[in-house]
Image 1 (cartoon, rainbow, N blue to C red):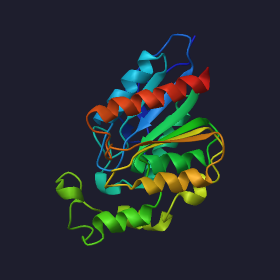
Image 2 (spheres, rainbow, N blue to C red):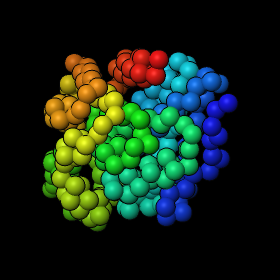
Image 3 (tube, rainbow, N blue to C red):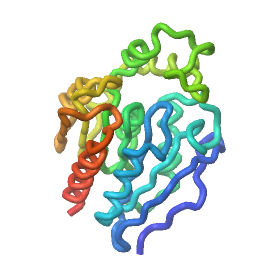
Image 4 (cartoon, rainbow, N blue to C red):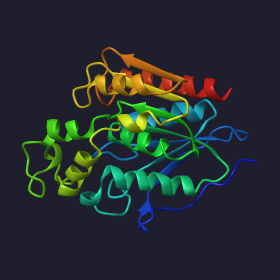
Length: 245
């Protein structure tokens, strides 16, 4: 019998986190948590595609929105990498008995590195176009904007907050944390990604411990658009199934 799944998830601040479960095989105790990137949510097409392919292969999946994002409670302006690392910890707390892995996209990838570097309950890690150099990202994408007055990529629902900028700058890079990750790690990145450069994954791969694998898609963008989402999900699913078999 599989371990139980919660009907409700909350973070340490008491904020409810929305989530969707995709059931795998009845005997399977592996559960993959899917986390999104900045301004995203659990329903990003690449995460939905990955969830469907993993579940079809018998692997259970729980995709969720970090607090302040999607339908989760909390304010977007309070969303930071550090708070999302806490959110992920709260979700792990609620899932005893499962063999847990985490797959994070973009900034959610940085969240995964920081959590996996300190939390032995995560048994494997997957980074999808994962962010490594957080301060460089903040400067590259939003360095000319004024926190508190500007929007992220002109999205009205996503104001640029000082807390978010300060957190990315304080973290600087997750490269040192990456060197402390001891679990199997798959990194996947599109070479033509113009949001988080593929070099971020290459830099993390260089310091990662074995077993590790880096898969690059020569024509894929940051969100693995079009057919690249299917190809990415197929590659990740194959790696997860091979790891647990």
